[in-house]
Image (tube, rainbow, N blue to C red; front, top):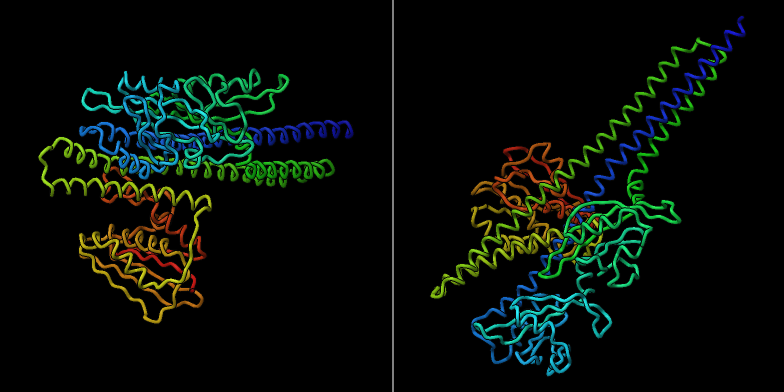
Length: 580
């Protein structure tokens, strides 16, 4: 009787143990699936943001360069004596993208251009049966851009044709060539054997495809044939000018061997409609969360081993250890809950980063749109005012130049943060005098300091050793810190700059008596995209990258930077540099 009862107890207990183990593995697999789904969505959104940024940059750059030539083509003064040679040289040097710019007279002969060694002077389009595009712009009076064509040097380039009219009379056309390699060097999207970018036109033909040697002009979907399930729908969306994310399956002998993720954004350049895409294997997502998988697996295996271990004792002593088992199972369940909490915290952090980037894009859009509006207003005023006085004209031009400088600073900040994140920022170190560098920085900010009547106190000992650092980068650090101090201080505020010898280092501080920061704000002050006031009604401008760039410059040269602050009493930034 006892043996029979023990046998049934053992069977029941074994079933319970198996159910517990199965539950743990089920929860582990379910958690893995949910985590992967969330991370994959975030990963694709980040890839789409990158693709949109690069595509927008390419589109803006191309349209701006064509606009430079359109401005010259629409002059009312007619064809100058030098056949636009000086104008074309200026455009070439400003654009820094054209391979060559040429002027073709109304008879189809190339009469001028820059650089001179690349211009086939005297070449007649009609005599060489190359007048189709020339006739098109003459007839339609609009810009025409060819598909990328193979140049004599072996590279590929797009030909831009811009008609030149004097009133209603056709006076010829400008030709500009943009080489694909120059565009690629400016807007390179890093790729490897598994992740790469590709560019197609509005017919799905390949214009650029990573580092692969696929045939240019071939249909992208034809590369994979019937071995890419879902790719045709993605390319159809690209051809229609859509933006979004997608995924497709690569097949081999009818069996799935890889799933790929795709993020794509359109590029509209006059008559050319392109689509830029970034594709990577879905295994990239697994690579990002492999540590999470490992932790969950360890927890699951520990739980399983523990259950088996405890079960062995329970088989021997039956129910004597039941309470201990319940306690241990509870502890492991708590560990699983804590693991889930850590995953939720990680997900929350990803969402916060996404929110900060969204705010950053909104702020950057505002910071870019404001100077554009000012430049447009000033330009329209100059265009409409035929009898504008010289002082007023200079004032309008000053507004345009000032806003161009503002946009240039924004672009420089974006380039700097990109170099810092990719460890590509280069430093040209030399021995520098701190006081001289501070004076240079103050001179650059003289207008801001004068506008707010700031009181500047510089306390630097005469015998302070020189530092070994990059001159321009150190000036950039001081300008960012001093500009921040001025922006967040009231009129007639005080800014204090001190420096002192500290063993092998020089310790420098920049302090103000402005509005200060809360502990929560101080904790995030060096994070990229973070701004104390990111609302649409904020009183001070900026992209939220300045202090992140400062931190990258200082730490990139082996220094350190910290900040202290108290609301209503100002802030102090202290950083160290290596002695010369």
